[in-house]
Image 1 (cartoon, rainbow, N blue to C red):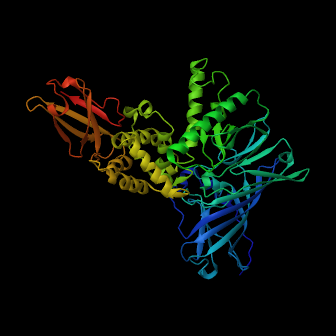
Image 2 (cartoon, rainbow, N blue to C red):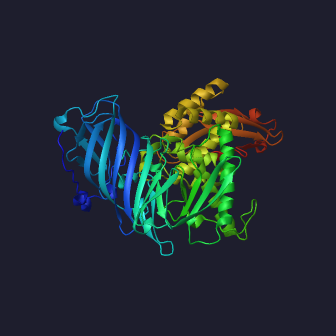
Image 3 (cartoon, helix red, strand yellow):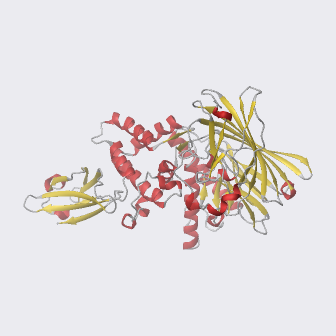
Length: 560
């Protein structure tokens, strides 16, 4: 084994690297699978840098002469790296790795390309590093807002954990996280609190140095790992039904926020209890909320949910079913409530079961929107959708589009309408049970959907129906032509935008206004032919309406 000093000066190429150069489609090679991270950080309130050590326990999936992981060139400086076999005193000291600037990765290779790790064995990769804190709100970000003092907050979604420490920064690589923070300067004062995913223990090493340790998490993705340091105060209540303590954290200098915190806790407890009952599975995370000015409305980090502070409602009009004192207060409260509930829904869809990659993020965002009661019918705005992107798209690795929330939820509501609420619940139960603490793909969900619905004698293939709407961009325009001579409706379809050959399985509901009888029909990719007598006893087409009170994501053009 050859000891070596590993010094990577990433800044040399920063002038020629921009965000446009980043290869967001890059996937790490599947040589190893992370099991756990043991992260130690030393942070001083007067510095915008941190030094640290991370030991990553990995399981070797196949023999390899190298290992590749993420490290952001703008923020990380690796000073030393080793590899050791579990329960073995022999340690391999890495030489300088190969850096790939576009994929933001480092590849560490063995000397003379000999086998570094053997299939079926467990190894510990240890890295010593220095990291620069960010100031843009992503990664571990440094802030100074005057009254609140200096504070730090981590926001790692989508791929910003690599700014702070070397890691396998893709959602499918779930692992347990153990965190230890050594804080000095003002951060060592009693007025400062450190928060993270797990329950904390504070130890005063000296007057100027404290250590915070946090209980290990269950397997989570890097983007769900978090930490925050600041002058925070908490309001907590124990919920009898959940048998646990729920807490809201705010900046300590703020006044008159306990009523809003109590309202938040009651809202969260009520929804969490309902979800646990509905899904027959409990989320193992603690329910703590941090209210700070973050870059997103909400972030579902395991055990510490962040909510943007400008959504925080005043205590005015917070009573249940209140309309508030003004339209603004009413809308603010609605936005806050939706954000809280949406992030709670992620504790199952996103945290418990995670998409294998961002291209499948609808499994997190669309399902969470559906289950949190997002009003798809009101927010779908089909005709305003000018996108040609499919719901399953690699583009979401660069940033998640509103399309995933709006269209994704509307499509799931169509699925719910055609298979029924009870059957969809069975699909969700099976999906969560099968993939809990793991990662799933769109095809995995479609397989579960097919397996569950195949035993219920449906007249259509539910999996094929959903697949059409997930993998094709834009949406269909359904043209309905009525032939007065044959007394028949003819239905055809074409895409509004994009690939002219795109076709969908399209559900359409007919309602006879005379009898109020509703029937479900299917427009195949070749079309549909219906006799007027199939949908009404009247001889007048005006006695028939289409999709009455049904959520659909397409337009209808009628020619009678």
